[in-house]
Each structure stands twice: as structure tokens, then as C-alpha cells.
Image 1 (cartoon, rainbow, N blue to C red):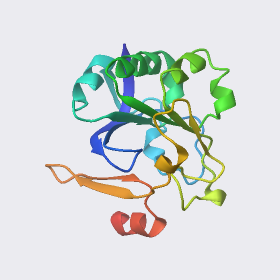
Image 2: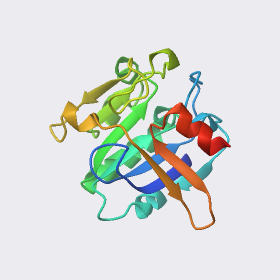
Image 3: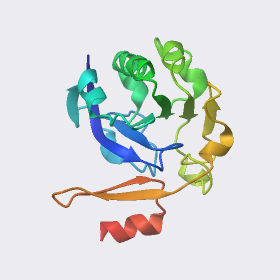
Image 4: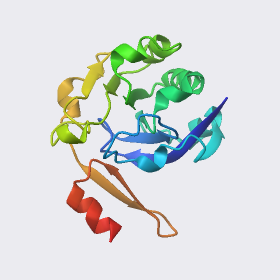
Length: 186
């Protein structure tokens, strides 16, 4: 099965507890004002890769995977296959979604996808309620724990990572302040 992705970060310590890989899926219809990842919104952009290719990118020593967007639940069938295979590998799973938990529960594969997930951070980003604490973008978003692998304290740290690749591309992940973003845009 194929997935349309925006990007992949093999190692991160700011997108959930412990060292994790981060997968940003491509495509989002919410278009929340002030979204940190507007380049992930187009449904046609990004790169199409197989679920097995993504699995091959994840370093063996990494204990978990965070799936973000765009909006992961726009690609439910592929997301289900991905989380199922990641769980078989023993990886912890966190998903960031603009859908609220109650909305995910009504999606065709929502209940089954969440049965493989340790934590969901849900809700549309609201720039008027910008968060300064915890691992979510705005204070209307919630962390839902589905296993006993983590507790809410594990989601309190809020930091950023800046990565430079071999050809000089820069990526920022985590929750940068507006002033940090402005400095990088100059």
C-alpha cells in the first residue's frame, strides 16, 4: 500500500517521549489559520512511497514513531497498515490529528487505527489559544492515552530541533516560537 508523505525525520527527541522517528503525511483539509505546517496541506504535493519503504527508513534502535501531517486520517487505509506493522515491530505510536477523538471514532477505520496507538493529540489548531506548555499546538487540543506506556507527564516537554542535511537544507520540528521562525525566514 502507498502513502503520500511530506517528510520523514529518522531521529527526534521533541515529538514525543524518548527517541522517535517522525513521519509527516501530506494533505490536510482543515487549513487552520496559523498552522505551522501549511506546506503539508496540498493533497497533491509530497512524495508517494510504500508502507514497507517507510518501515525500512525507521532505525532499529528508535523506540517509537510519531505520525503527524498534514492530516494522517485522510489516508486511513494506509495509516491502518502502517500502525499495524509498526506495532508488530514493538514501536510506540503517537498520532497528531486535526480531527477530534470523537470524530475519529466515527471514521471508517478510526477505531481500529487507535487500537494500535499509544497516544493521540487531537483537535484543530487554534492560533488564539496558542499553547506554551505541553506537546500540542493550542490549548484546545488534548492528549488521549490509550495504553499504559506513557502518562500525561511524558507530554509536558516542549522544545525544538533544527536539522541541517548534507546539502544544506534546514528543517525545524517541535514547537518553535514565532520569533525563532522569523529568524529562520530571514
